[in-house]
Length: 446
Image (cartoon, rainbow, N blue to C red; front, side):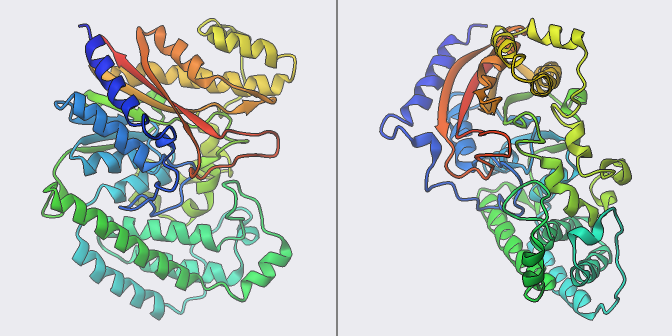
């Protein structure tokens, strides 16, 4: 089927948004994270307003499109914006904390019962005088002082005493954010970097972990209630349950198990080498130590996934950096842009070359499963950051376009946006990362 007319119409509508404001897609000063988007400070979250604009224009051109997917769903920005528009959603992520966040944000929305359970939880925490630690892991005392471990243990015990899983999940998210704020790791970076000894000592006297948890819990309930009110007002809630399908996959996208095919996909993949850009797994390592994995997915092995601070990132895109020559040759043959870039990078550093090759090897392996999950005529939207390696920008958008073209999927619209508010590093210890993003629109013709 020829979709050229629809492609042209959608492109026109997308371009029209920035005719009066050339910086429209940056959403500078207008990128708040209400309605549940801010329950936990997850790394490099997509800007909700960007997703909102994209979904609205796609549905405006294709009103019969009702199902959406995100194969790298992270904290669930695409999922939440889909729910607000009454769409069905399926998503995948390899990080257990991402799965937990999406489980909570997708409901059920038993708001009054949640508030009652929260009061009882606070009472349990207050009445717990036990001094024992609930968890034990490598370098635990490096990341938490004694008082913090006692308080976190009391909170954990109180959450585990809650009978309803949906409520426990909600409380785990609040605990996850509390761990992030009360650990000895700096909150100014997503990596695990210990605070200075002076900072830890000065902070110890003013660190009230229980208060942090209760403040986070109250904030999360307020945001959750706002999301419920919006969904309920639009009649997308029945007896506390979102009326459309939500399916969440705790899996590697390369090994994606398929649901019913979707109408369109919006995603923003990890930005490449997690060790030097956004270490999603490392950022999640300490919070996950305190969470009961059986409440996320009973098939997950906590001991394996948290064996080291880098295990989740090792399993993610580009994490396994051992590259066979055959693998390198195979991926280079698929993209002239990648070939050209690697030829330049080979002269700089073999280690850096392997990082780039590993990422694109893994990303290429995701394309077929992703396309198999998309209906003919379906639209793919990729929000991409072209980071730098070796001081030179990696043309991720051009390389991805080459890889999709081999599957007869072509770009029909391209937008760019400045990054003003997306929480991620502008620099790391080796190079500048990125300050802008490219948004690619593609169509699966068959």
